[in-house]
Length: 255
Image (cartoon, rainbow, N blue to C red):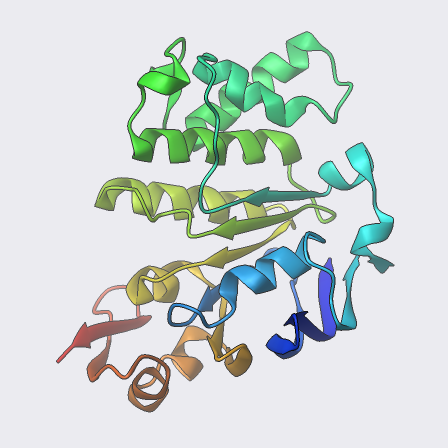
């Protein structure tokens, strides 16, 4: 389990994130929403140990996240950043295989896990292709497969942090990516995903954290926090909030 307690982050003399208290629950997808500059990526950086808190702490399985080092942490915690730079012509399966580097599971088992991750990210058809020949969306899905392979098979100790994983994807693969995230947590792992699409968040996330000016605006189930008032406060956007006719989750339509 990943937990943030009274978390705050400063850049210089400016507090850019404060008053964060949350715990990722086993089997849960927690979505983070907020306008540009709200502190979403800063939160992710603090949760994974990349950014040092100015106050509070982040605990991974009851230990400070920065007490976990090297392969030990990589087996429990994986991060998919907004952009991943790779300028060498690795084959797709080689990039995904980089997720297996912390493990000593053997070539045969790694090959099986890589194939499962390729299937989960819907890129099995890209097997053998050069990473550099892929589109931006295809590359994003390759890196999704890489972090899934890193934590495979997911269990109660594993945590996946995703920073705008659907930003380059077509509508179909926005859904397949979040379906893969839900499948990842099905055996007790947990995931935090930063999103901008309110309707994707409503459909796939168990709880949502709304951030505004680096502070929590609301935390709860989509039905509780995706309200006309909260979305007006958060985004300055006038919306209609309806119920999805088949699934029952909130359906947000801009006026």
